[in-house]
Image: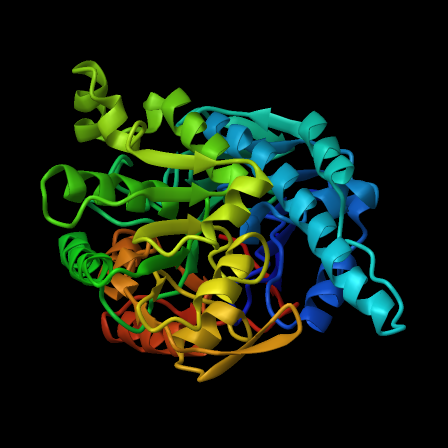
Length: 468
């Protein structure tokens, strides 16, 4: 079997790994690359393989850096099945539609400026119609149910604990004349003790481990420390009369934040103030969270049984905004509030407008609540840039910028080590993906120090032959 690392190799976005086995081509993930605008269009429009020759896609979860280029894959001729858990299928359908809408809206906004400057207009990366076409190819498969992807390739989804429906992908592979072996693809590994979701399942008898390494350079503290920091930052800003502006993934991070903020206000730990989730996608995603209790942990199931589901996602206290006019109206207000809006990288969507209107007020706080890709606005803010460009205009950063890394839904170094060590008895190789060098290289050294490996950190588009 040949494995080629086409995306999320030595970087974190655009996850794409191609398996060639028994005459078939199987794509693990089809994520959207996020970074410099010129690279964004070039990389995402042009696949390093012919989509018409891909036989199947396996999707670990619905985040756009793992699913977001499926519309282009289908548009360019892919006609096979896309396997994912039922919750992932449910989420991915709405997330892709939202992504298509954002690409169209951003192109319209930018083209107004380009026309005034006499510059050529740009085309959206893909449209809502392109995104809608993907739905015909999804095949939902429940957790822990084996299914055949191709001759000699049996797959199974197991809990990853990252977002609703997220899964590691277990591939049991048989090739003529060779011993069977198991490739375990971690997807994005979640964390223990996060609200709503079950904890990740550790690898079981993997021959090869394809594993994320986003936070391979540092362990995470218990999420309760992040909750305490969130309480302090939000409470201080609200008491000072400011707004808290949070670029956050509409799926996963938003629901965690809503859960905690809702409980903090209920318990009197922070001042009561309006919480606005300004993203049609986040509104839909929160409804989908309610529709998939099979993904809940014990605490969330208990709340569900006791009729306290409203407390899980904050319905009733939290204002979910769909309409554009209601979103714009928030920027005319000066009363304390929390605004959570997509995207987490602060590269597209309504968050750009909220930053544009609020970043110059020192009473306000911009809260970065997870990893931000290089060359994105969220990364520039997290690194303390005194001035940033938004929609082509420069703005002084006078608002306080705070990063809370422990809110990440990704495993830290300690859990990554435990994850790999679970396969110690059978492992013949580890491949680190979905991580920048600063995360992957310390993890490589740590894994080797603990006698795990050999460990590889593949270059983009590099290939490796795997067999038992």
